[in-house]
Image (cartoon, rainbow, N blue to C red; front, side):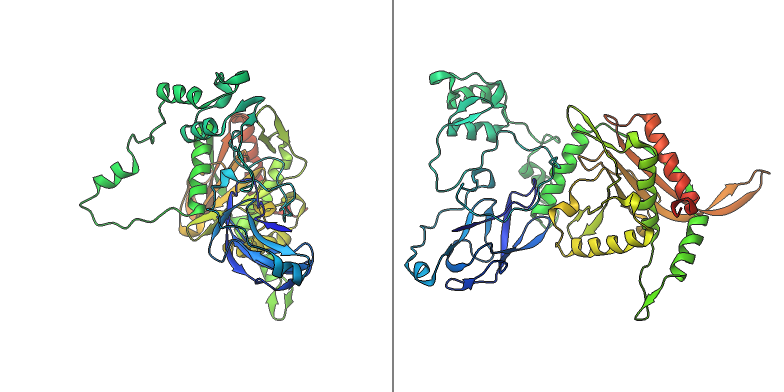
Length: 435
């Protein structure tokens, strides 16, 4: 029985085996952990799904394999394992060239209903054991070479008439388009080597992009290029909220001498945004290409800074949870995000998100929407600021500046303003979040 590299979400194309818990000749039973994998987002232990004996390990510790690649083989018995002949070592193929064979057994993580980013419709994943032949894409037969050339040059195969037998798209059909449409250059007009050459007389260190940074770069470039952003900013009075927070934390029950919760300002913001989305249901929606999806609950993502990047775990149904529940859940998600132990379903999806840089003293900023979400709230620092009184005098109050980034395909200006006003109301009168 083949054990393959599992799929850990639509955006994960490969995994690195960091640990093998079993070796060749070891007996396993269902539920035994076989190996641990690392991706650009998470680490995960993969268990066996049936009993047997490890007959072969094809991907050793430290090696990277694409999703669907066979990483090990389990035999039914020790005798069968001893008689097993290891397969010839094949070069690891790119993630776009591998697909689990029909007979393989995989440990599949839950897949989201909507892919967080657009996938290449012409990407083919095939088993390394199969012979590659012409494939049908969009009802048209395409040869492997034509498919590869199209992928390398960003050419849409659905727009190319085939000149091969029975209308098959062949290499020369793609090559003719390459001549007319050369591959795009970076937006700056310069290649990586050109940029490096500009600084040849300046001391610097080259830091290769890891998987997480590559994913962030791709997602946010896509977001800024494809989502029509607009921004709404408001100042929010925080005196009442800070008082309620202090009272709630002082009254927290204790266990073993420690409070069972410690509510942060960010926990209030999560709750307030969720309630605001429920109050303005037209904003509790996302853009899904040819339709808009409106939700019955408010799932809120919260950006968590990691070394070399960030993840956005999601608080599900935040509108239905108490502040103490949100606080404890957020603490658990943040810890596991930093340890790269989140499951795919814990950081995918959501309708909106929060990015809080207040702890760094940032007064205000604008955040980039994380697709497929339709809004993101950028939260600045709470500061003491002068405010004019009704009689023309001046008093000081605690204020926080927030900026709501909106996807104009889903949310118009007036709708975004209603959402921000609802959020401001909840935060300035925090007792309304408790009833």
